[in-house]
Length: 510
Image (cartoon, rainbow, N blue to C red; front, top):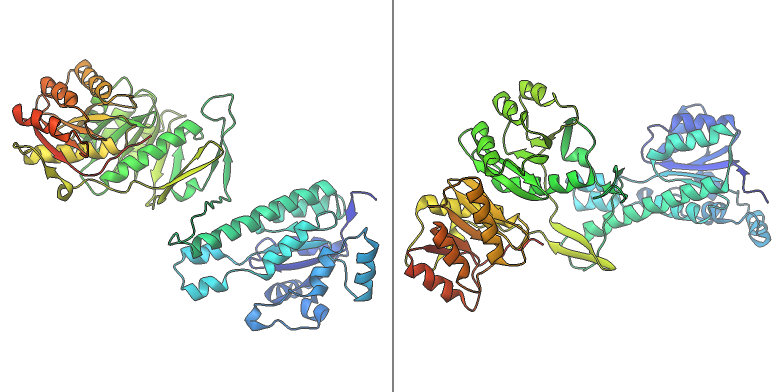
């Protein structure tokens, strides 16, 4: 038999009616028999289109407050009956079950109900049973039935039934079946995550409805995609589309700057997921200038982020630099006009957001999952382990450096003075190498390290790092502690009038 089938009947049961009217009218013009339920049935009648109530088909009313409407052999038999199977056709005729060629369903809005803060009872009532069953049945029998499983598919389906007088190919039915199982799997994942919100079941379940094809991945020969809803995080005000590498850097920038929300004006410049410049000042213009001074070479082509509104004076300074992305909670109108002077520069207005509580990454043939590192070192976490104690300003710088260190690739050492990132050693296989890299970089940009502080993302197994730091002029250190040889580093500090505090928390970032 031909793979092309002309549709003759349809079952329509949807939550959202938007966009349904032209479909109903087109089906009616094609002479398609329409079956429907509840509010959808009324909607169709109000359009002046003839519709058969499912209750009339099944001889059963909607019961249990609407929980059971379509769950009946006369409905599911009509959907699942195989048109080329003589036994199925004989049973359909014997039990007076009509063949159903189209199923159009739009599920109860479970995720929207959860996000609205509704009560558990209301949320549970939004777990669709009949709708999800209709979708699965119709998608399973795609050889004979086409399933429209979401209102976002209405336009595509309308074009399909309009182009060839209701004749639909097997390829199109299979394509819509694939969409249907994507809808059902996402829906079930959302329900599981809600019921498992306290993490009782250790299962990896993630699903994203929205996807964006990127120009390419990390490199031009790699395909790349983003799965998620960027519009819920940012208003894109200007510039080209974000790339794979842009998105990784934006993610790093947002997570880093989240450490400084509500604090004095703070500006960061990132390159390859690490901060190459960061400063906190009385004005955002000064914060930007001092962040840039940290490494004006690496800043070229970087990602810029502010924790406060960017004004015109700051925008004038930024405009002198080639940068990929500028992120801020807001921009002055004049600042926007200045920054839009380069057509490809991406400008993102960051909305208030709640960052995910879990981190995921692929590994081998599976996925690694972990809780996000939400620990930020505070004064109360500090244990002074040396005879010399850091001053108040040094303590402030130590905590500032610790925040940066937490968001820098391991092994890392961060050097800070007066709330300004002087330099960092990033992604090194040796902590000594990381420190030497940071010192060399700070010296290259003519920073005076005397009176600066040092942060390490993990403990010192030997006193070599504190000795190198001491000789560079660094006099205060923050580190997690925990090495069986901690005392060696502590002893060196005591002998050389250095202060050291430990936090008890390691901040590796691999």
